[in-house]
Image 1 (tube, rainbow over the protein chains, first blue to last red):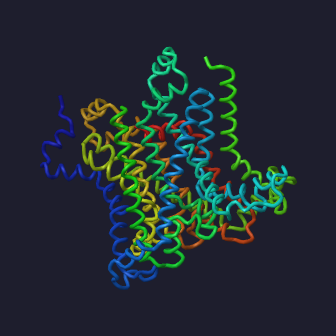
Image 2 (cartoon, rainbow over the protein chains, first blue to last red; image 1 turned 180 degrees about the vertical axis):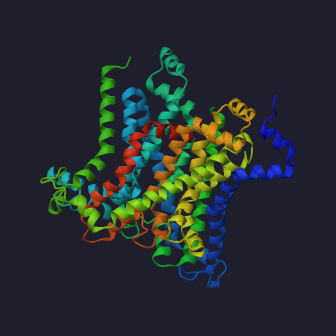
Length: 306
Length: 271
């Protein structure tokens, strides 16, 4: 038998060179991760410790002034709290709604698969356009919701949903839910249909009611995927920006201004890049810290339930 | 097995869900056919439908340029992502390179919010002279979506039986040729779904595009649409038409590829 080319090559090439060839497979990926993760981190640290503007970075070294200033800035603290609170609140609500919807789709069998196609549309829509679509519904003049409320005689004058604090947050939440519940539903659906078929029948024979089946059979079986879906949605929630920009532009006042949005304005409207860099670092670290328990939960769920 | 009353409830719930998910899009479509004064009526359907908003949206803005820019950048960025990720995740599985580190590092880099990249990428592209250019944006997006592609592709690659590759190796094919001509065709649906998802992610991105595109000629669709927002005399009908014109290509792709997309998302997201 003729020896294969690859094994012949492998015996001739010295081991160091072979290791170099092997490394080439992942080198572009490592380079890309350096550009997208390591370089920004180092660059942000450099910017944060200097007085920097968008036009002239690194004007003078200021040490930790930007960082300590931001840490004690009550207005900035509030934007961080809002960003984190939104991510957790939206992830919790959306995983409950998305899982319920997935159960419904599974129960509907064939029709459920067609419904999955319907929910793909919101998921694929650019968030900016999601904002535009919901703005048309919620606008005080010409908005569909106000039109319906007034035609039905429920309200006399149009309500500025996006210019009132609590409704403004609810509006962002609903638009976010509209876009991301489909994502949760598709993933939960996949987890549910991949369950072994006998499970459902066995529990029916045992005479378990629907709630008992959900609580004692289905939920433990999908706990691991649910935890990973929750983690994913949480991470996506920290990235909230487009909906705020289009729907409220951070308002009314600063009500819906999250950390991402205030940093964006600081950098691109006030050009205070040094302070923006400091705040970005703080926000990223806070995200990392608050995500750790969820990562732990995810690990625990995958070990405990599979 | 299901009682009729339960069945009725299920159908009712499904109807509510479908209405909720389609209503904003249906209203967007309806507004795109409304005249300027009709928009303020707040009725669901246009009282006197007009087609005028659609050509007007293209004529009064650089909509065609915006869409073209978004398509070019997102498609090429998608190719960059796949060209980098496919060999790397293949090497991780078959050659064991970075078996522990790669999944952790890619996850960690995905957790960082995009705002982290905004200022550093601005200065990086400015320094290398690629700010406000196609190659600059293509590289940034191509690199940024690698973690997502890595997650989506890896489960597909894992399912390829090693025996098939051993057979290819016996035939004298090197690793790279085995990947391109044996493995890649086997997981074509997975590669297709991953490519579409990363292309759509780039097409939909707004935050970085808002800071890294500086002239009208380079602006992407999402930035272009957001500029409508600042306009005090915003024409809702034209805005709706422009938004829909921009997302229709995505919807067509999504509907044509729905089966692969759902599978790709499902395999990558839940393991």
